[in-house]
Length: 348
Image (cartoon, rainbow, N blue to C red):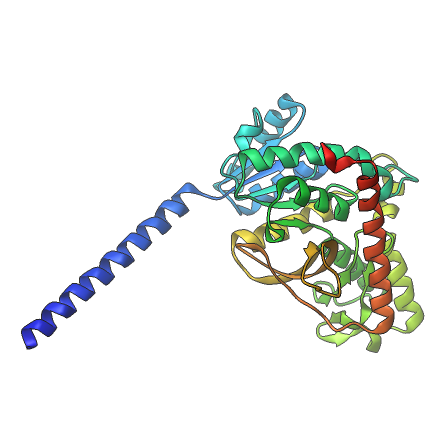
């Protein structure tokens, strides 16, 4: 009997060891392959995203895809050399064609016309929708397993376009907005207070535009509610400045729009996915199953981001005024989506 038990334990332990060995081998193969991120768009925004990824060593490969291949090659070479100066392993390459985005873990879409002074994000609707549609179809064909981060404006609508054109599950198509808007709000709070830099946690929901919904009730400085630090007039001023944060930069630059803060905000999302951190960030996703009382509509909400992309939508308890503001923001985005349908944009 003891011999039978011994033989059983030997077989069981051998099988278990073999299973562990195979799992370890698969992990090593996956790790040896390295992580790959493709950045579409080689303007100031896309180039800065790629540069931050290279400097932080967040992935092994960064592919730059742009209309001007020589510019993409030049920037890729420059960034790869910078990565060596920073003692990082990241290799930046220029795409020769859409096939070079194959096997990408993440694709970031930054391509599109930038805003100019006096132009709203909504003014870019049709022009950028056609650009984003083209790249969405390329991703579907050449990187069908990638997670997509959309940054092109108007961001929430472009996220919807990518979802429709790729047919990807909502978990794998995210729009970068809330992290940037929250960072702007945090900066304006710091400007007002004069202290707390790096300790301010701001929260912004809704669309990435004039109808965004900054949430002072969910905003703290080292855990202290800003209601305890600022009066209502000061908070109202911060909310207004947050909504106009992007336009202020556009007007000051005179030609182009912000890219440092948006690029850093984008890489925060990339890092959360590649490192499977399960951190909660506000970003644009397709709401389903009556989340926040909406379905089949894109809006910026708090999301747990991990290796699978938008792994869980976090539903917060909103006050009646906040619900009304959020409803107005969702309606504004849906209005632009409806315009695209009216133009039969999705028919071909």
